[in-house]
Length: 107
Image 1 (cartoon, rainbow, N blue to C red):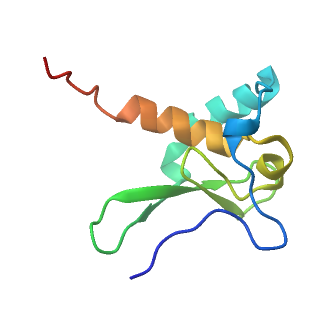
Image 2 (cartoon, one colour):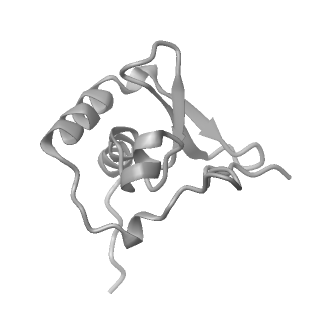
């Protein structure tokens, strides 16, 4: 059984956003919005057993043909490693929030 891990390497672990308090700048949010609009260029990474999408490969906006894996919570890029957020992670989180149907509350 293979699992997708985007937690970084042993030498350079990805930190959790739960410990970060800074908010993304307007520029980072604008980049994330542009990535969401261009979601057709993303690759969906699926679990082989269930077929469910578990993460996305989102293109870099500065380096052609470079993609970063993100699940909307974490990302492999340097920006996420430094700040705890990035445009790729914000774009994936926004995309999932838009595409996921609202859950019905059970009374």
